Length: 272
Ligand code: SF4
Image 1 (cartoon, helix red, strand yellow):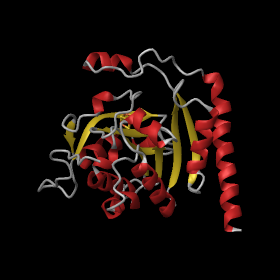
Image 2 (image 1 turned 90 degrees about the vertical axis):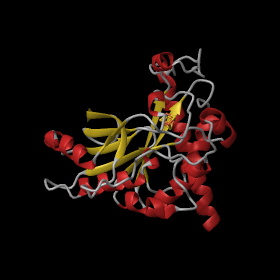
Image 3 (image 1 turned 180 degrees about the horizontal axis):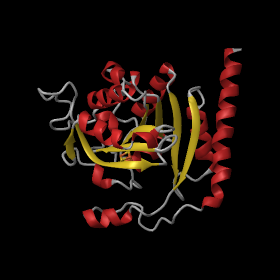
């Protein structure tokens, strides 16, 4: 991956024990990014360029606003009661571009004076560096759950769809499995790209070795993000691709489960 740096991020202001983060926006009543009602922080900056991304305004590593952990804690505390069954999720953009900030934020949430807060990371995994996993120790030590997006099961098609090779993402999945961190796999199903039984079975095979996977979210492709591309003057690569027919989702979900079971049986037989 080309080195991406976020200007000013992970710097520790003299009057704070915490790193600064570059944040795109905050959602105070999130219901789709992790269990329960959640305080969701969308960070700025992403190294991937998924053709269907509905947040292209989070791509630039120079946009967003510099925010302190203390500020986010204050915002969280003002609605603390709502998050009893939920917690905090950091989404993006790609959160792993700012590991120190994430570690400080999650640590502060775990040590919340009103009770430990559940922490969840919504990540594409691509900013993980398998050559230096120690850079992510602090954040992963404070992460209760990861929503891990696997964009395509085939490496060549993955690159076409996202502009990036999936090796780092799979290495991140392996690291989460090693650490036994709960993972929910997310897969966007796009007509003509990721909507075949074969691709979904292959996805099942890929995730089969990860016994920490506790959920699978198959997300039907929609075109609601297109308007942002028009506003930003960015060409939309999936022009003309229709919304996913949701009636096919159970079949494709079953295909992932079938692939996973088949691969687990093979792995079991190989061990003997
Ligand atoms: S990883 Fe997420 S934020 Fe980044 S381009 Fe893909 S969909 Fe968009």
